[in-house]
Length: 283
Image (cartoon, rainbow, N blue to C red; front, side):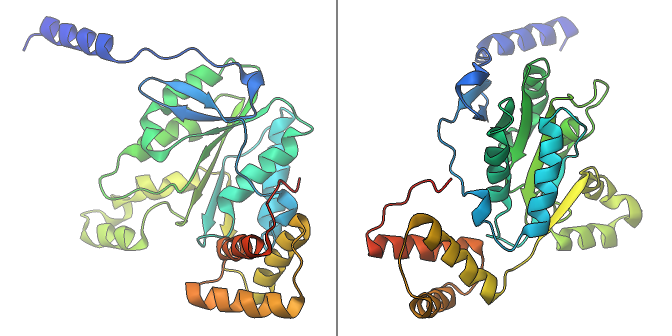
């Protein structure tokens, strides 16, 4: 096929593609969702979140992410952050809570959630945000990569920025259950079967090294688990004795076969429902 024919096909496909929608009024919301086909930023009037004071057992990660985000909100240098570790321990909740906490004093701070499957479009998103007089935390939840997954290459546009560099007003926060963003058995399998084992997965593994902050989340102990629930009860006005809370919460944990911040919240939701307490924002 000739080059001219290829150009005509490309032009036809471009005409068929949905036109990007105009940039939104960033003053109408503090958080947005990025969508493609067509490219657009959807305002989120009410973010689903937990107040920062209710996130227990993650003190070091909380303080580090809060300080990093405060620097960024003030227009100072800040690092991209990878929040990794145990399921249900508040990684995504912490990102949203830190943003909400700082937005009170830094009105230009915005949160933009980007889905993993939309990573190939991140370059277009960065171009949209680059010249806007706001500060953007890009948030990619539950990030991981499988075998032959090339999405990680798109992520480098945020972490390294290519020839243009990462926009000064953008920082990336990602959460993952995996420290290196890919399964350990995949790393070992590729290393053992590769001609050059040291280079087999270096490109993918090194992606996590491009995050300036690594914040680890580990399973909570029983005291932390019970403290989380008591904190929720106090914040939302749910009355229950310590003895009853302990007995019920431990039984709930046993039926779930795990203990985490998510399990604590799920028990509290059940408790609040049984007590007839409607939940409101404690902030």
